[in-house]
Length: 313
Figure 1 (spheres, rainbow, N blue to C red):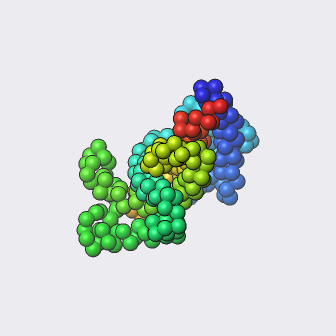
Figure 2: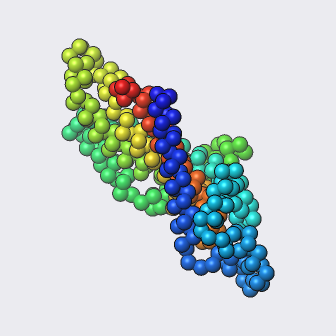
Figure 3: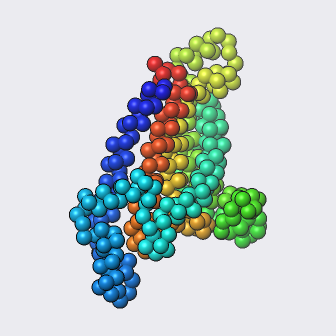
């Protein structure tokens, strides 16, 4: 397992290099002169020249990429042109908010999808299977922004149980934090739960028809043991893949949901950076997001080995 981990880790290095080159190159293709944008209204020639020299805008593209990637390797993602804060500091400020939202959403999705997928597969063709399928199609078809607005109208405006928007740090007030995060987490988790449920159902149906399951039943094992101990473990493999990808999507910033609930996470950060043409922030956020996706795929591969002994061979 350790050899496989090291081998996979080394294959990620060229991927990260290519991704960084792609991020930097596409950013340079945006129309307009970054120096003029960053200099503000009625800039002086000296100010423009200073910005161009500071950002190495007069150098060839490969040279600029070299400056940027050298800084990245030292933990320097640049400086925000709007707030003049280090990009890494901005990311570290927003990342805990998005991580909390993503983990809560994924937890809600797993609590809903795994039991629903298992029950749907065990009682294939029955009323429970039909109900789970209707739930999945409803979750996949419901826009997040619409569901968020409806939840605000119900639980905030009509019932007054939860705050409509805003964010409170869990270190300041845990109860207020959970009250503010539960609705956006449910909005995101609902859509993910629907997708995970469909994958869980398909995977369970495949495993329940396998030879080893028939052998386990022939030995006289109870249906509960067959389903939960034998079939479920192998059926989780595709769900782990999808869950890792969905977590990466959540960590990249659920833009619409964060905008509806005014959550100061990655989504709001990237939107503000794009509108303000804050190139350093955009590059830093996209690079962190891409790296997160790649690392989550690596962790998913490791989880396969832990759950499925057949893969170790």
